[in-house]
Length: 78
Length: 418
Image (cartoon, rainbow over all chains, first blue to last red; front, side, top):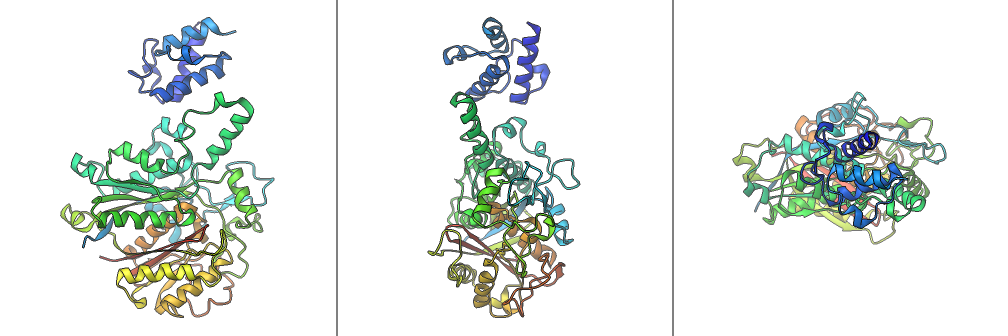
């Protein structure tokens, strides 16, 4: 669990160029971390690559916070 | 008639990442050339280039100064160079704080010859190896040529004309000329104008080498490879970087007490209508562009003190020189003429803007930069001061800057002291 969270946060920091302490589990990609819809597409691709999961478009649309991403990955990774 | 002056300068080049460092290195006769470090070039015919140096180099470029980390990840290097050079120019002009009215009267005309070739190359490999679902969502707008102007306008809130020229190696000069016209026509009071390029990647180097344009015979002596007008010249050395100027309507600049470097007085454009890569053998297109620029400037040949030549270190150098002689006279009416590509290489779409800045600094400091490696001048250069090897102190009242590009596109700018 915590391993997934750390790896997700690291990707978010790298892709969005934000301070690590801002990437809390409650943080919204758009409202709190300055992402736009294309940044989320890119983040989802990075999660897929990192964790070897497929995140279909309809699932990706529901990922709006850091914890949404961690939860989806933990439930779906192989 | 509205007059157009230059009030800010910004440079990212192989000789430095700010105007004063680049200029000092250029005047000192330094070369920005070296072996290609950006990728393994051991299987390339051409293995040298004039690269922008990394941040830890004595005169390297630190992208973190003016470009957000997130944008750096999304866009090709030519856009990063362009955003930085535009930021430098705005800072130099004292225009980082503008009110909303002025922002609506301020535009961008920053182009590129080729655009995001490194990113096109790498994403096509991703597409091939990993499939379409792995192509970056930022692929398209991170490679497009007009995205320097786009990014700069977003960063600074500039709502005036948003334009981007694509005329190969004439891009930088056309960008400045077109932007000056926009100010003359009243479309804007201030324009950020210039060009940028970064194509030192495997596909870019291979493409120019296959077109027989690059120097491939000095791989063991990179700093001697770019040698315009020299008998042993054998093709250009690829450079990269950006040059951006702030152009401003003269009364506007005066009213706010801006530092005025020079006035853009003449702009000439023409087409060769001859061949895709070779210039017209008699230089007719180049001559037309120069004559148009001089006529519009209302200057006589004897008024020009310095010509910054296109001079790429190819066979075309002497064609250009013959055309300049027809326009200015056999002795160029006393003007000095040099090619700064001997030091920084050929910045392609950035060349015309970077070289226009060198012309402006020549006017400011009354010194002309040298043509490096000119040891054995080719036939046809007799009686012309090509400023071999060392910079030269001299009077510089007005300058002529030439840029010519693939497709037979020519642009000449004339600028003078205010």
